[in-house]
Length: 229
Length: 175
Length: 175
Image (tube, rainbow over all chains, first blue to last red):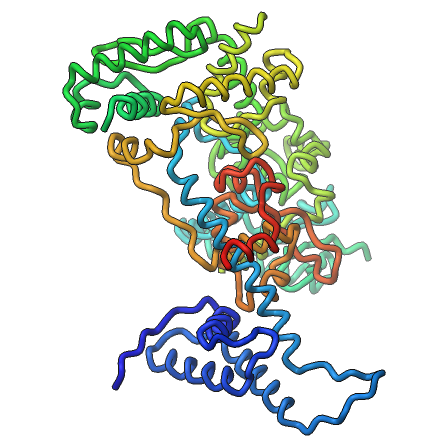
């Protein structure tokens, strides 16, 4: 068996660009038969080496095969009005665009290498620990809190829960506000038993049409509304 | 290493230091005899002195330190005081996150989620006009309710509260 | 405050800063017109340049910063036992390049160009504060938009986004 140097590619476009360069072919006139077979060979090699072939690589394989079969179809001489588009043109466009950004990434990398060698003073103690908050930080802070709370649930000793009492308690939350977020409602209860009791109470209230549970889209915040009816 | 390079290196090292540096520490790294290091630093200190700028190099606690001249202390304090004023501490940011996603909300409710007292954070957020009081909750004790302000939207570059990223969008990002 | 004092104060403030400072920030504190501040900083930067010491003052990320000269990096690293930051991976750099040239842009749009999932890169870039959420696109699903931050400019040593070479120019560079 001969030695094979297996390069790692970021995705199907990265691999295709490599094949175009390696074969020294014109990106505007890609020999689709040759490139497709090399692409498929590479995919097989990746499998042999247990490299993670993501679905994106397979989708591109399908596209290449499709282009190849289109190229094999007998071509009708196009009239002036309907100049048939080359089946490869979309692929070429994608490759060219990707190539541009690869070059931009290369530029950024070089730029960083020189910047990495200049030092400024470390933040002084007064402003340390303070952040110029952005949305990501805000959301991240919130997500971490939720996670922490979830970890706490279930640690505390359960107490006797009365569902009727819990129903009354739930209704009292809606005296002033029309809606309340589901996660906040649950945030008041620490133990698994408490949470279950609350859920049961909530279901009962929905059945009695005292409350409604709404969600604007899958996985979004669940809101509990006081039923106006 | 020639003298000019040694001088530049010493200046750069002094610049980065948070306290006085000893001659022998610098000498060991640069592999130059301590008396020569001392001579170079003295020369640098002299140049700083003659230039009469905002910085000085002084011998202190058995070492040398680059620092700002005492006459500029008040400007520095004002500058960094205001810069700090513009920022938020982590705990305050957490409190703000809870209010943003759960408004209107009471202090007790925030404390249930954060598990600590949030008095100081609330005060700071009110001062910065990022939150405001939105009435009282109709429960025993009638506690105050808090919600975010227009300034909050401006601070985070949001057109409206609907533009707040959702929790599951973050989860999607964390993969 | 006379010009000499202003110059000293600016030098002291720049010395204390851990990142680039904007002209208008300094102008506000010193109560001096921004064009005058800019002139003083330019003069300071020139003096540093001519002195040829270990430090420099450069325009970066829309502000000015005092920092060590690149040629002294290895001495500083040896003295302080510093290690250079881990580099951004190729996929992350590619994602960042697309955002830089195409901002604001959605995750789906980036994925169309790169041809792969970019979730992990986006998370990493957000954590490193090189990109930020810039609202939502007004299309179905209202996806989040991303753009580069000031930290992005600082990280790559760019004065502004205009400093990014045009895509056509890059082709010539890499041949």
